[in-house]
Length: 130
Image 1 (cartoon, helix red, strand yellow):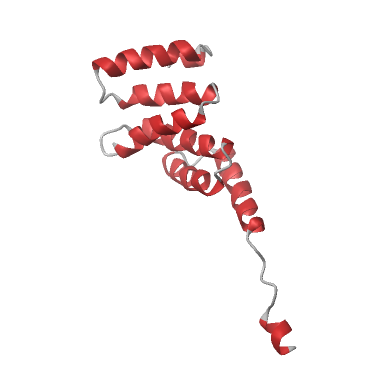
Image 2: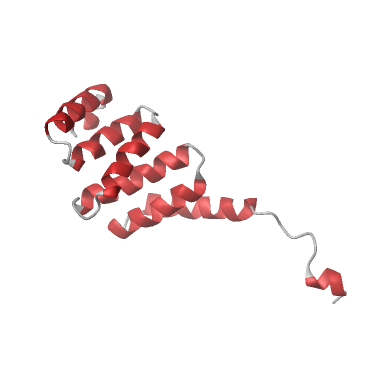
């Protein structure tokens, strides 16, 4: 975590991998490595780490789980996978309902998804002249 805070992402990945070799069940290391991958724009690798954390949700502390949902959502967002991002943002907000940045971004994505839906060419009013 300290390496991530110091923006030493490659080092953070190395330490997390070393720790995971010693204790593969310590999910906080997957969160830390996933954050480092995200910061290095390796979004698919980040998503894989966050999936591991989320798959163990009954054994992971809530802060790690909230971070995993938030960063996985942000990774999906960067990959333009809007619906997946929205789903993860909703879950992240369950763990930290005060995160206004995530709430705002989720609402923006929901509007984009809605705007991209095909509009019907015919309405009942047009068909029946009413």
